[in-house]
Length: 143
Image (cartoon, rainbow, N blue to C red; front, side, top):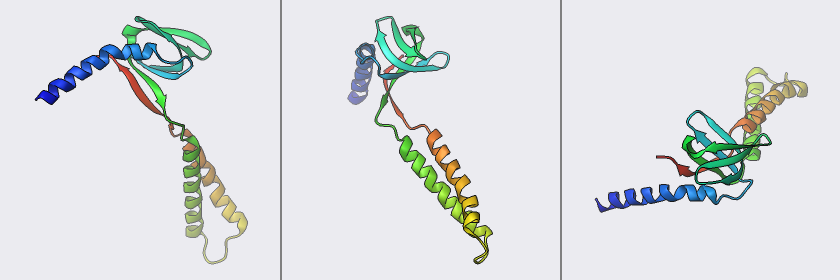
């Protein structure tokens, strides 16, 4: 029971101080705001007790704190290159399986192998590139 009260106390204390964490962000940090209607993402400019300003598509946009449900910052490196390589490898594997299933004996030429594997390799690499590759860390959550 004491653990529950301690957790609630720490959660309330964290929420009160969380906006000060937002105000202390370094300018330029990629930030996502979850709003009452949707979300926006941009480079952090500044924050006051009442609002936060981000650079979105080259313009400074100020959002009132009351509209902000959560503030998230990117954490960790991008994994896009890894995702592209995994997708490419999956495409190679799928192409080789398709070639094996459709070609009998030695009737397949190098051109046929090219026709089977290249489109699947490209599709796999494109899929890997489109998979979200960033993780976000919540630094502020409205009650």
